[in-house]
Length: 531
Image (cartoon, rainbow, N blue to C red; front, side):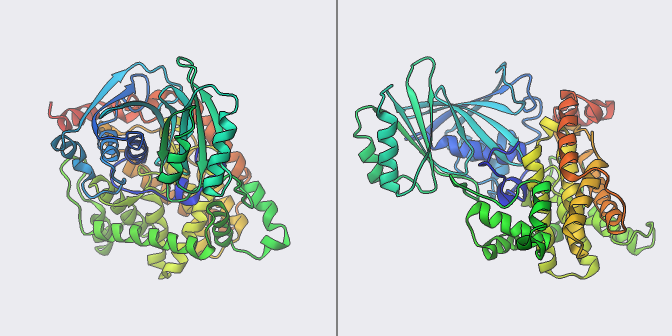
């Protein structure tokens, strides 16, 4: 389930982050975890010990999927799209920063759990965190105190003695300094019996106010954490709907009956993030332009040594031009553009995780590729992408985008549902048709496993992205022609989550089942590792 505030954000949870690397769960989330954890140190970071659970999903894949380069880049203070992200480990070493990855037994509940021990001058901090899918994360423990830090608030944390009036005094002081109420939670370290007071606000606690708070005799330590997500959460956030059923109810009322689904999506994100509808649409426009630039560049060919597949996207267009392909309307362009985005990802180019890096080819391939063939303008693509983002909100609210939790149905399956709804918007379909197309697309891929070869997000990931894009086109046309959806979207999302829980861990992005363990896959893996 989403961990960013009470309600998912289109730009936090669904369309984004802008990043480099093969996996948003491994690269982007790890980079964000590292960047937040770094703020806990007052001095310079000298050494980091990263412990991964031997029974989890990260341990067997952390090098090939990019956890290592992602986390180290975050510890260097970089964003997930930093130009030199792929070289972060070497750059950290040159800077005298030692990062040691260890596989241990953490006895963790979540498959994407990691424990960080950051050693600086003069202090040392210990952080537990999980990657929750699509670049999202949650820090669950700091210095032995249970917390919930997801990067969507300004966070101020105080370690205090167990004083009856301390929490109220701190809250009053913080609210007086900031002029806004603080969302406050209190936890106890069972070993020291100290308390941690965690306060979430939309403004950063400045140095002068911090000095005032530190004069309280019961305050032992204070941490200030800046947000790392593009859309901040707020204490009293209210949205008009957060499920497909609630959207149906909203459009049945006069206020929503005249709005297209992309307008409803913009309204949702505006209220969720406290920004104007115009700003929301312009943010999406910027994302669309990043996607298109990446696709157009990759269609010319990409190069990168550490990957399984070479450039192939151009082959589709060349073969189509020579009359060697089955005529399929927009589909051949969709296949080529989907492939191009996947190749940009595998070459460490800039991509948009939408909803994940592993499924990043589906939305741009389907929506931008179809719009290109149909000669539609950028506004039409922005509107279609807003629709896709809203469907993603419903999935984030009711399920997950983490293949480690639910298999590839949560990545390529979710992306296919989002793309199908976006295609309906390109065709000026109704809100109900968009939701029904999303439901059909997701119904078609329930149970899709995640079994990457040689720890690279390439094979069979490319084929699954192309399948998901093709499925989106079919699902959209089924609904536009009047097919019966039968199972509504919310119920399909719930079924997807339950199916995911039934999948064995070996089929959920661990590299321990499916094609991952085929004889040829093992040969490729050995070759990639130089053995």
